Image (cartoon, rainbow, N blue to C red):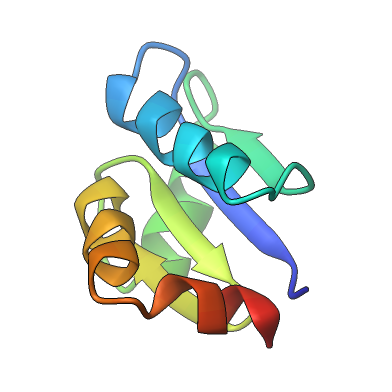
Length: 86
């Protein structure tokens, strides 16, 4: 399974929803980077995500998935499981 990284903020319901989807898929090993009070980590996320400023920002391996809605769209299209299997 590829490395999964999720940039989050501590008060974000979409971050919780994204993490819950991973857990339902049996993925319990991911790196969560809480950017709530860290401007350097916020800038890192913005740079890595191509300018996106909203959380969560999700990366599976070298693939930038995007946010929570993007993650659920992949799941609904049947494309999340193959991405997790790579």
